[in-house]
Amino acid sequence: MNTGISNMEYINLKNLNEEITRIKEDFESKKPFRYVVIENFFHENKAEEIFQNYPTIMDGVWDHTTYIDQKNKFQKTTFAKECLFDKVFKELNSETFTRFLEQLSGIEGIIEDRELFGGGLHQSIKGAFLNVHIDYNVHPKTKYHRRLNLLVYVNKDWKDEYQGHLELWDMANGNNNLLTKIAPTFNRCVIFETNEISYHGHPEPLRTPNEVTRKSLATYYYTKTRQSREIAPEHNTIYVNTHGLKGQIKRFSSGIKALVERMGRKITGREKQT
Image (tube, rainbow, N blue to C red):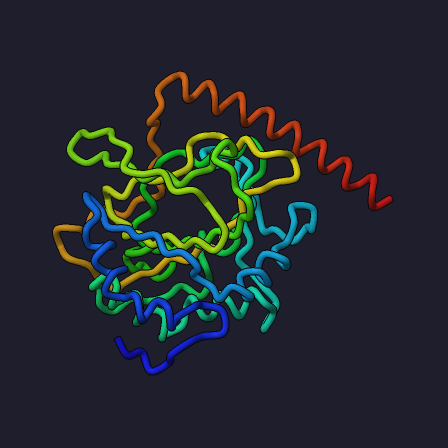
């Protein structure tokens, strides 16, 4: 593949281009919806820079926090012009990178979302979870069709016992099968198509130490239209319960504990500032 640019400042595009055949075959082989896991997505030194500059929960820069089906998840979508994260997301939304995504997915006319609606920086604290769901299918402003999700994790020394794995589920035609669990390890990228059967989430509450959070970057991609057989009435995120009543009780209890701990962090933060 020739994108006209052999590399980028942050994204390891040279490696992606060299591995495009293998990556594409992996992506195409997945059923019932396509996905691929890519290691070492950013240049090693740039991934380290992103990690070192990733804002903490106490920095006060987060746009908002969610509490219902996404317990204790912090999100940031606005950045100062030409700051580190502004430049990173500009690369992720560049024409060069969207051409790579077209080559990978076979989806033509991919359009980026520079407003990062629903994307940006995501950070979750102990007790957080994200119920399994399919995403909203139409951008609320542009009305474009959502086609691909891209997630890059920036968590060092992540342990399986922390939970927080991205789960992909097959729930088509009445199924209720876990396809895979993907650990959110450092500099790992996951790309998957979004449609009416691309169920995903991390429903198991985080069991991290208080000082460890789950950090990621997220971008979503669109097209002006899609095949008629894939078009569904416009809807918001649709959550499902894959763990039954036991899972509901477990996540409710975890959410209460996480909220109490977060309130304690706020109080501690104010004490440090006074």
